Length: 46
Image (cartoon, rainbow, N blue to C red):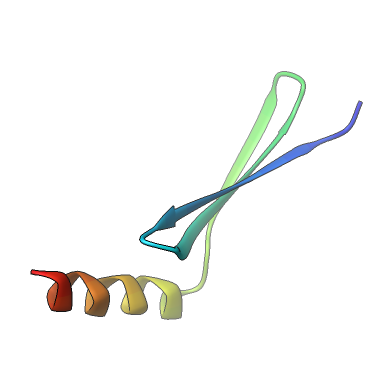
């Protein structure tokens, strides 16, 4: 079986990657620099 990779983004900035292989699912947060970029973009958007 082939694993499926899903990238979760906030306004085109990647935040998390999820891998699925049948019933198994693993999610990881990306490094802090992505969260900092999301926070900065959110402040600018408001």
